Length: 208
Length: 239
Image: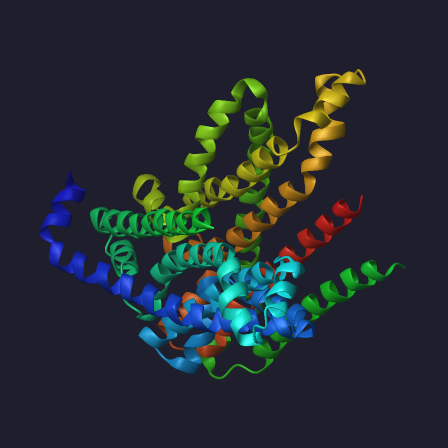
C-alpha cells in the first residue's frame, strides 16, 4: 500500500525516470545494433578476425558492470555518455556473436544458388544472408536488451539517470517504497522487452 | 605437458601476475594520502576476501540446490511442474540483479547475509534451468536403450543423463558465476562489503586509482573464474 501511495504521490518523477531509462536503453541498443551487426558481418567475411573479436567481446562482458562503469568514468566523466558507452560495450557480444553464427549457419548451397542467379556480393548479403540470419540476430538483440535494462539501472550510479536513481537514492535514504518502486519498474521494463522481442523473433521466424 | 594444460597454466599465471602487479603498483605509488590510506594492504585484502566469501558461499549454495533441483524436476513425474518452474525461472532471470538486491534489502535489511542470500537465489536460476534443460533434451531412445540394457534408474542418471547433460550444465554454471561475481560488486550498496567497496569509495571521493584497483580486481576475478569453468567444460566435451 505504501508503495502504491508513493507511486501515485511521485508519479511525475517516476514517469520522468521511466522515460529516461527507456531512452538510455533505446540509444545504447540502437547504436550497439548498428556496430554489432556491422562487426558480425565483417568477421563473417574475414574469418581470421572472428576468434579475436569474439574473445574480446566475451572478456568485455565478463567485467562486472559497476567495474566497467568505474573504469570508464575517468575517461568520459559523470553523466549520460558514460552510461551509454558501457551499455554499448555490454550489448556488443550477444549481437556480434549471433550475427556471426547466424550467417555462418546458412547452408552454403543457398549462397551458391544466389550467386548462380547472378547476384552481387552485397545483394547476397542484404537479400539472402541477413534475412536468413534475422531470427538469430534478433535473439542476440533480445539478450542484449534485457541485459542492458539491468545494467542501465546500475548506470544511474555514474549519473546516467533512469530508474536506478530511485533504487540508489532509496537505499541511501532508507526509503523502502522508493526502492521497491524503482526495482518493480526496472523489472517490468526488462520483462516487457523480453516478451516483446521474443514475440518479434517468433513472428519473423514463422513467416519463412 | 599437453597443449591445453599449458594454456590453462599460462592464462591463470598471467591473470594472477596482472593482479599482483596492479596491487603492488598502487600500494607503492599512491597519488595522495587519501589513496594511500584506502589502498593499504589490509584494506585491499579485506575487500578481496569479503568478495571471495560472498562469491564462494553463494555459488556453493547455488550448486548444491540448483543441480539436485534440476535433476528432481527432470524426473518424468515432475515434468509439468518442471515446465512451470522453467517459465518462472526465465522471468526471474529477466529481473535485473540490482532490483533483486534492492528488493531483498527492503525485506531482510542491510548486511552481508542479505547479499549472500539474494545472490545465492539469483545464481540458482541459470544452474537449475540448464540442468533441467540438459537432461530433458536427451532423446527418449537413449534412455530407452539404457533401460533395455537393464540399467536401473540411478545408473541411468549417473551414467547416461548427467554425462550427456554435462556441457549444458557447465554452461549454466559459467553463466551463473559471471553473474555472481558481477552482482557481488553491487553488494556494497547494501552494506556487504567486497571489492565494490573500493569502487564506490573511489567514485565518491573521486580518486581514479581506487576505482581502477577495485574494478580491475573484480574484473580479473570474473575473467579467471569464467576461464576455469570454460576449461572444465572443454575437457568434459572431449570426453
